[in-house]
Image (cartoon, rainbow, N blue to C red; front, side):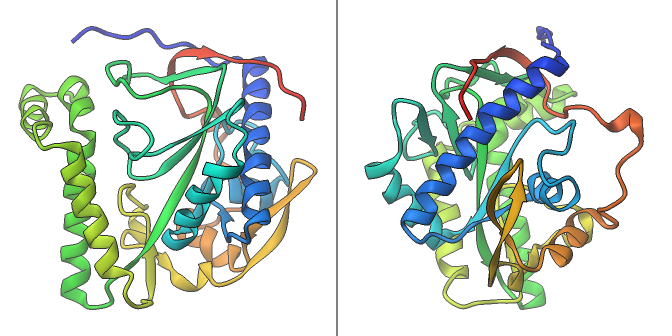
Length: 280
């Protein structure tokens, strides 16, 4: 395998990257508020809002999450209201080469290619992740079958990358075989699974194509998505789960304790990074 060169993110680059991401979050929030769409800051972004009132100093991305009906409303709103001179909403419907089970808002005029993803033809650029949450079955057996199906869908969508980047010959061969399954077929199965699972509210909610930590491997408590509150982030206010303590404890455990100093660095390795200065 040809080894790709990693492009280190300097401290100055990180600040510029965060400003671009904040600009996109402001646009995302503007559309959601205008169209009465509910969402929450997610992952490290929610943790940053609680612990730092903004970015975790070494964080290099922004995550938001919403229930599937809200994402469907957001997607329709973007067709009318998104500033397409600056932004592009990317998902499997808008980009025929996109293979992830959640959306991204991309910034035009930038480049951001993750290390190991150079073979993908999808549109690139600095992004924020828009995760979509669906209900998970309550039944013990159905929940485990559901989890296995999500695993299969996730690996199928990842397969073109696995065929290039997997560490062993056996796994590269396995992923190469999986990559022959059409992308759209994997999404049809994902959509069917979400449609069936969303017919009633259940105890847990999960985004199907991204694995949660083992402590909450099947999903987060659904009540984390019942009510949102205003949360400060970089001097502005965005929406976050009112149950943020439960949310973050499930994701991180004792979330108010920062990691060791040697782990306080950007976690996304990139092979290409081109940034612009934005007014925000």
